[in-house]
Amino acid sequence: MDNKLYVGNLPYSMRDDDLQQQFAQFGSVNSAKVMVDRDTGRSKGFGFVEMGSRDEAQAAIRGLNGQSFENRALVVNEARPREERPAGGFGGGGRGGFGGGGRRY
Image 1 (cartoon, helix red, strand yellow):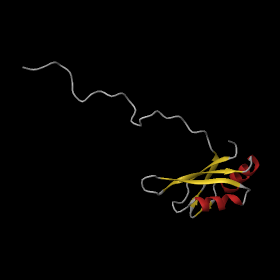
Image 2 (cartoon, helix red, strand yellow):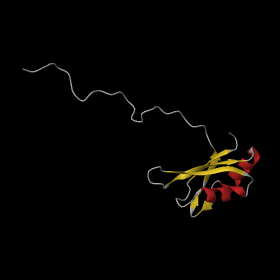
Image 3 (cartoon, one colour):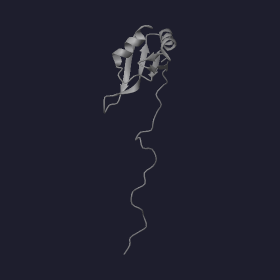
Image 4 (cartoon, helix red, strand yellow):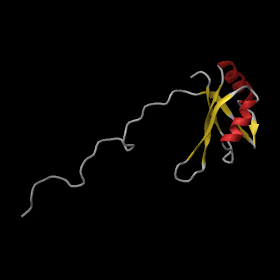
């Protein structure tokens, strides 16, 4: 995974093709994906690029990290493996909404 890069602080107007073009100057780009909110379709401001080789990925990091693009300083570094998250999303155990205490007469 050494040639997969995280790209942050992207302008919200940036699309996959724009991202690919920015990185193509440093070598072959296997994939470029801007992450979007599935409900709104709006960019989340970050994405991932997979370069053809580790050397090309390192050149892209050196060439683009901190560079201004549409008045935003890009953050480019090696992507980390995705962390496992617990299923459910709310965390914690569930206690029922009704307290015990027996019947009242």
